[in-house]
Structure formats: C-alpha cells, structure tokens
Length: 418
Ligand SMILES: CC(C)(COP(=O)(O)OP(=O)(O)OC[C@H]1O[C@@H](n2cnc3c(N)ncnc32)[C@H](O)[C@@H]1OP(=O)(O)O)[C@@H](O)C(=O)NCCC(=O)NCCS
Image (cartoon, rainbow, N blue to C red; front, side, top):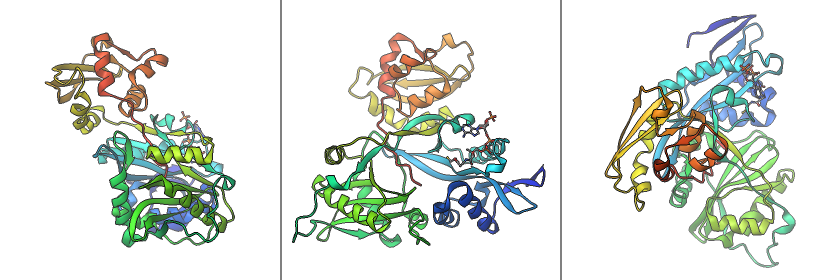
C-alpha cells in the first residue's frame, strides 16, 4: 500500500518492523498495559502475518500511531471442511482522534487486502455494535461459561494425591496438545483452526504476571494423556479454555489446579469457558451451580455467498441423507434483495451455485437480506427463527422443509482467543 497523506501531519500506511515500539505504545494506551507481550508475539511471530496486513494512521510529527487495524489469516472448521477466514485484530484509535472516521478508512484498506485473500468468512470478536458499521452480522455464539467459586470445589482429602498431573505444553510438544484436541473435537459445529506452527505466537514468555498469556497443559494419568486445556490469563481473570477430558471425574482436579495458579497471580477469579463435551459441561454446571457468564457472539461477514456455499457444499449430501430430500432433484433460488443465486441439486447431490440476474424478489424461492442469510448459513438461526422476527425473510411454502434441512442450527462454541 502506498502511504497517503491525510493532512494535519497524518499519514495512512502499512506498518513495518521499525514501528513495533510505537505500535506497542499505542496498544498500551488504547487496550491496556497487559496486552503488550501478546501483541508483540503476534506481530513478531504470527505465522501467516506480513506487514502488508497491518494498517496504521501515524502522526508523522510525533511518530505516534494514532489508529491501527491488523489482519490475521486463519480458518474456521466445520466437520473437517476448512473455511478460510480473515480476522480483524488490534483495532483502536487514540482517544484524542476518535470519531473522525479513522477506522472506517483503515477498514477500506483492510477490505482491499482481504479481498485479495479470497476468504470465505471474515470474523471478529468485537465490542458491541461497532462492526455492524462495516457490514458484519452477529452469526456465531461466542463465550459464556461458568464461574468457579472456590468454596464449591471439594478439597483434596488429606494424604491423597490428585489422580492426574498437569504437564505444561511447550512449542516442542504443542502437537501433542493438538492431537488430543483434534481427536475430541465435536462434530456439526464451528471450530477455530489451531495449527502446530501457531505455538510460535501462542506460547511466549511474559515480562510480568500482569501480562495476558496462555498456558497450555496435557492432563496425564500416569504416562497417558487423558485430557488437555489451556489457561488464559486476561483482563484480570483466569479462564480454563478448550477443556477436553477422557472422563468428567478429572474436572475437580483441573479446577483445583486452576484455582492454585490463580492464587499465585494475585488471586484473580477463575472461570471455565463452555466446554464442547456435553458431559463435562453438565458436570461443571452442577459443580459450579451457576450459569452466569452471558454468551456474546462473533461478528461474521460472508464476502461471497457462492464461494461460501461451494466450500460447505460437501456437507449438503450428509444433511439431506435420511430425509425426504435424499434424492432431491431441483433448484433453490435465493435473493438477498440485492443479489440472486441459483443452487442446483441432482438426486440429492449439490451440483453448483450460480449468480442470477433476476431482480424481482417474487421470482425467488427464498428471500432473505444478506445479514439474515449470514445467520442462516452459519447455523446461528434457523429459517423459522429468522421468520419470527424478520418479516423480509420469506420462503416458498413447499421449499421450507428443504431449507430447514439444508441449513440446520449449529451449536458453535468458538473460543474468543487468538
Ligand atoms: C472503537 C474505536 C476503535 C473506534 O475508532 P474511531 O477511529 O473513533 O472509529 P471511526 O471514527 O472510524 O468510526 C466509524 C464508524 O463507527 C461509529 N462508531 C464509533 N465508535 C463507535 C462505537 N464505540 N460503537 C458503535 N459505533 C461506533 C462511528 O460513528 C462511525 O460511523 P459512521 O462512519 O457511520 O459515521 C475506538 O473508539 C477505540 O479505539 N476504542 C477503544 C478500543 C476498542 O474498543 N477497540 C475495539 C476492540 S474490538
């Protein structure tokens, strides 16, 4: 990107390695002191990051970074289908320069760069409402979980040892963590891809216990790995995240371990992010006796509906199987009231999706604005749910059952971390 003069000494450009100190100063002021180690690791070691993915507005007189947006490339996964994603990160503007359209400008640059990557989805775990300004829709569950009150967790009886031990994961054995995680990932839901090379930025030394950080563990029973999880220390809390266990009977020991670590770190409160394994979830719910961390949602943008459909289409045959549509031959036409699409099926198999020029919404089977379509495609809301509160979501009666089967609800538990 060519640097552009915005007047008043402000320049919009890509950042470079030399800007790291100014960027860290900016992050400290805008996002708080505790994030600098993590964002430094991200800038220096994120495996799919290059400086063309960083967009800043700099005050060229003072050298200050006034506004910043970073693009991170990754993928979400749905039943083994990788859906390439780009995520907006480290979004901020110094207080003195807010509400002047800086992030809007940087978002335009972000969009140009994103479109070169051809992502299937663009995702953000962001502050309320803001990203709606840039065409995002809330379309996947985010967060929620359990608060761990130490008084509700039974102590280990005197003289007894924990049945399990916790082996810290380093870059060298990160693969072992991923192997166990992958063997236990749930189906029919969205998952965020974590790759072996991601250890480079996820596992880093902190400069103080006040810095946010991740601590990955293998749960061991004798020599055998019987679980994994990581601790995320952030915003003065300790979250147990991505908890997978062979058996719920290990949960108490994990919680005792997390509480002990939290005590070392100024006795910060402990929470457990919602686990994917249903038995572990139920056990935690019973053990902690509260359900008080309200879930939030991911912002999602689907830049090309046909590309997204093609990507997830291997799932369609599976969804149609064992329903009255398993041999369906025909078409489903969809309009967002702006764009039209034609999906073709033959004997229960998806044949393709093409764009359709027809502008009259009445000539389409399914009429659904892009935001609602995003929620439907992501499995965040079903057709029927959308129709209860969006009068412009409409469907030809005889194709409603087909749409219901094709786009089911997906219980996404996508954790909020990098
Ligand atoms: C949120 C933040 C990044 C906005 O930066 P900014 O440079 O003031 O944003 P812009 O001026 O480009 O605003 C773009 C649009 O969003 C709107 N907007 C600004 N702040 C908003 C907010 N907090 N919530 C909702 N909309 C907001 C503006 O009105 C503008 O809309 P318009 O273009 O239709 O007029 C900035 O307030 C900030 O750094 N906050 C603290 C850090 C933070 O929360 N970062 C986001 C982490 S996910």
